[in-house]
Amino acid sequence: MESKSQHRNYKHGHGSDEQHKKDQALFSHLLEHHSELERTTEKLPNGICSRTTSASPKLAKIIQEHVIGMEKRFGMGRAIRSWDPLFSALFEYKDQIKMEYRNIENGVEATLTSDDPKIVELIHCHDETLHGFVNEGFDAGKRESPKPSWLDEN
Image 1: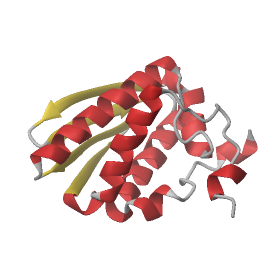
Image 2: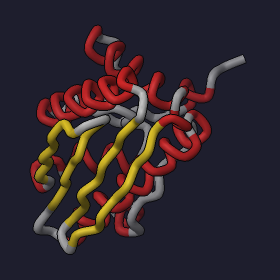
Image 3: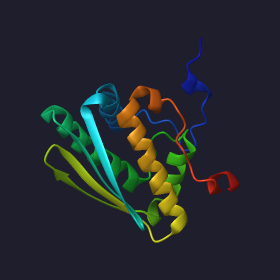
Protein backbone atom coordinates (compact mmCIF):
# COMPACT_ATOMS: atom_id res chain seq x y z
CA MET A 1 0.00 0.00 0.00
CA GLU A 2 1.39 3.41 -0.96
CA SER A 3 1.54 6.15 1.62
CA LYS A 4 -0.38 9.36 1.09
CA SER A 5 2.86 11.36 0.81
CA GLN A 6 3.81 9.45 -2.34
CA HIS A 7 0.82 11.04 -4.09
CA ARG A 8 1.68 14.58 -3.04
CA ASN A 9 3.39 17.07 -5.29
CA TYR A 10 6.34 18.47 -3.37
CA LYS A 11 6.70 21.82 -5.12
CA HIS A 12 10.10 22.60 -3.60
CA GLY A 13 11.39 19.04 -3.21
CA HIS A 14 11.13 16.54 -0.40
CA GLY A 15 13.96 17.08 2.07
CA SER A 16 16.01 14.17 3.31
CA ASP A 17 19.17 15.85 4.62
CA GLU A 18 20.19 15.69 8.28
CA GLN A 19 18.81 19.14 9.11
CA HIS A 20 15.45 18.24 7.55
CA LYS A 21 15.35 15.01 9.57
CA LYS A 22 16.07 16.97 12.78
CA ASP A 23 13.42 19.60 11.98
CA GLN A 24 10.89 16.87 11.14
CA ALA A 25 11.63 15.02 14.40
CA LEU A 26 11.03 18.19 16.45
CA PHE A 27 7.79 18.90 14.57
CA SER A 28 6.58 15.31 15.03
CA HIS A 29 7.34 15.46 18.76
CA LEU A 30 5.31 18.66 19.08
CA LEU A 31 2.40 17.10 17.15
CA GLU A 32 2.55 14.00 19.35
CA HIS A 33 2.40 16.12 22.51
CA HIS A 34 0.06 18.80 21.13
CA SER A 35 -2.29 18.54 24.12
CA GLU A 36 0.54 19.88 26.31
CA LEU A 37 0.96 23.00 24.16
CA GLU A 38 -0.84 26.33 24.33
CA ARG A 39 -0.97 28.93 21.57
CA THR A 40 -2.42 32.43 21.71
CA THR A 41 -2.47 35.02 18.95
CA GLU A 42 -2.98 38.74 18.77
CA LYS A 43 -3.97 39.77 15.25
CA LEU A 44 -2.21 42.92 14.10
CA PRO A 45 -3.22 45.17 11.18
CA ASN A 46 -0.13 43.92 9.34
CA GLY A 47 0.22 40.37 10.71
CA ILE A 48 0.24 38.54 14.04
CA CYS A 49 1.99 38.25 17.37
CA SER A 50 1.70 34.75 18.82
CA ARG A 51 2.89 32.87 21.86
CA THR A 52 3.39 29.12 21.87
CA THR A 53 4.16 27.67 25.28
CA SER A 54 4.14 24.52 27.38
CA ALA A 55 4.24 23.87 31.11
CA SER A 56 6.70 21.07 30.30
CA PRO A 57 10.29 22.41 30.30
CA LYS A 58 11.27 19.73 27.75
CA LEU A 59 8.49 20.79 25.36
CA ALA A 60 9.24 24.48 25.90
CA LYS A 61 12.83 23.82 24.78
CA ILE A 62 11.59 21.85 21.75
CA ILE A 63 9.28 24.74 20.78
CA GLN A 64 12.29 27.08 20.92
CA GLU A 65 14.48 24.68 18.90
CA HIS A 66 11.68 24.23 16.35
CA VAL A 67 11.33 27.99 15.80
CA ILE A 68 15.10 28.36 15.33
CA GLY A 69 15.06 25.54 12.77
CA MET A 70 12.11 27.02 10.90
CA GLU A 71 13.75 30.46 10.83
CA LYS A 72 16.88 28.91 9.29
CA ARG A 73 14.82 26.99 6.72
CA PHE A 74 12.84 30.13 5.92
CA GLY A 75 15.97 32.23 5.51
CA MET A 76 17.58 29.67 3.20
CA GLY A 77 14.37 29.06 1.25
CA ARG A 78 14.39 25.38 2.27
CA ALA A 79 10.68 24.68 2.26
CA ILE A 80 8.92 22.29 4.58
CA ARG A 81 5.48 20.84 3.75
CA SER A 82 5.98 22.03 0.16
CA TRP A 83 3.10 19.75 -0.87
CA ASP A 84 0.82 22.17 1.00
CA PRO A 85 -0.08 25.25 -1.12
CA LEU A 86 0.01 27.55 1.92
CA PHE A 87 3.53 26.55 2.91
CA SER A 88 4.72 26.73 -0.71
CA ALA A 89 3.35 30.28 -0.90
CA LEU A 90 5.00 31.27 2.39
CA PHE A 91 8.37 30.28 0.93
CA GLU A 92 7.65 31.89 -2.45
CA TYR A 93 6.82 35.21 -0.74
CA LYS A 94 9.31 34.89 2.14
CA ASP A 95 11.10 38.11 1.22
CA GLN A 96 7.86 40.02 1.90
CA ILE A 97 7.46 38.58 5.41
CA LYS A 98 9.28 39.99 8.43
CA MET A 99 9.72 37.44 11.21
CA GLU A 100 10.88 38.33 14.70
CA TYR A 101 10.85 35.98 17.64
CA ARG A 102 12.15 35.77 21.15
CA ASN A 103 12.32 33.01 23.68
CA ILE A 104 9.99 33.59 26.60
CA GLU A 105 9.37 31.62 29.74
CA ASN A 106 7.95 28.26 28.64
CA GLY A 107 8.20 28.88 24.88
CA VAL A 108 8.39 31.46 22.11
CA GLU A 109 6.76 34.73 21.12
CA ALA A 110 6.79 35.33 17.36
CA THR A 111 5.72 38.32 15.31
CA LEU A 112 5.14 37.93 11.58
CA THR A 113 4.28 41.03 9.55
CA SER A 114 4.11 42.29 5.98
CA ASP A 115 3.37 45.54 4.18
CA ASP A 116 1.33 43.67 1.54
CA PRO A 117 -2.31 42.90 2.49
CA LYS A 118 -2.22 39.66 0.44
CA ILE A 119 0.79 38.44 2.38
CA VAL A 120 -0.95 39.38 5.65
CA GLU A 121 -3.70 36.95 4.54
CA LEU A 122 -1.03 34.24 4.16
CA ILE A 123 0.28 35.02 7.64
CA HIS A 124 -3.23 34.75 9.10
CA CYS A 125 -3.81 31.41 7.35
CA HIS A 126 -0.47 30.14 8.64
CA ASP A 127 -1.49 31.17 12.16
CA GLU A 128 -4.80 29.29 11.77
CA THR A 129 -2.82 26.25 10.62
CA LEU A 130 -0.52 26.37 13.64
CA HIS A 131 -3.52 26.61 15.97
CA GLY A 132 -4.81 23.46 14.24
CA PHE A 133 -1.52 21.68 14.90
CA VAL A 134 -1.69 22.63 18.59
CA ASN A 135 -5.36 21.68 18.90
CA GLU A 136 -5.39 18.47 16.84
CA GLY A 137 -1.81 17.24 16.46
CA PHE A 138 -1.19 14.69 13.71
CA ASP A 139 -4.79 14.90 12.45
CA ALA A 140 -4.21 18.53 11.44
CA GLY A 141 -0.73 17.72 10.15
CA LYS A 142 -2.18 15.38 7.52
CA ARG A 143 -4.48 18.02 6.03
CA GLU A 144 -3.82 20.76 3.55
CA SER A 145 -3.78 24.13 5.30
CA PRO A 146 -6.40 26.85 4.79
CA LYS A 147 -5.23 29.37 2.22
CA PRO A 148 -6.30 32.72 0.79
CA SER A 149 -8.56 32.46 -2.26
CA TRP A 150 -6.07 34.43 -4.36
CA LEU A 151 -3.69 31.46 -4.23
CA ASP A 152 -6.10 29.52 -6.48
CA GLU A 153 -5.86 32.33 -9.04
CA ASN A 154 -2.08 31.97 -9.49
